Structures are given as structure tokens and as C-alpha cells.
Amino acid sequence: MQVSEMKYGERAIQEGQLITFPNPRPGRQYTIEITLPEFTCKCPFSGYPDFATLYVSYIPHEKVVELKAIKLYINSYRDRYISHEEAVNQVLDDLVAACDPLYMKIKGDFAPRGNVHTVITVEHHRQTESLC
Image (cartoon, rainbow, N blue to C red):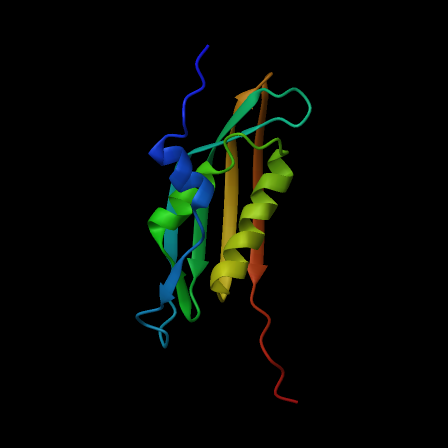
């Protein structure tokens, strides 16, 4: 069996970072909704693949996450052994760290496996500074 070199898509996923850009309307609260229907990871117990649709909804503060960067970031989970709960929480943590939104909600709707359907929902509310 011949070992092949890494494909350009695999390299892009491996090197991908969550890139942001300035919010074009920082004085206005608006919601960005992103659907990621091809999320995959591996069960940390069995090694079987898990498939999910991730729904990301957020109100940006000063930065917005670039969509191609999110795609590459999400694809980096495909070979990762991680539970549904940890995966959705980690995605939230990483996106919040990248763009510091006013609010963010992520719902991971995992495809049924073994007659079990799992939906994980996590939220982040930006801490506001006290005026006291």
C-alpha cells in the first residue's frame, strides 16, 4: 500500500484558524445564523462516526467570524474522538474565544445511532461591566 501525501483540503483543515473581521455594524444588535449540516466526529468509546447538524446563532460584538474559517474549523472534528456533549461545548468555547459575541447559542442535532437521538444546546451570554 502506497502512502500518499496530504491533499490540499486536508492541509487547509489542519492549518485552519478561526478568522474574524470587524463587525460592519457595531452599534446595531443583529443576529447571525449559521447552519453546518455536515459536522462529524468519532465516538470516544466505540470509534463509530457521529453525524450532526450544528446550528450557530449569535449577536456579534466587535468581531464576526469568517464563514470559510468556520467550515474548516468544523471539518477538523472529523477524526476527533469526542462526545456529543464535549464537542458542542468545545465549539462554543472556541467561537466565543475568537469573536467575543454579545450572545451565542449552539445546538448540535446528532443523527440517531442505536435508536438514540441526541440534541445538545449550549449558550453564552457576554458579561457586561458593572457601572459601580
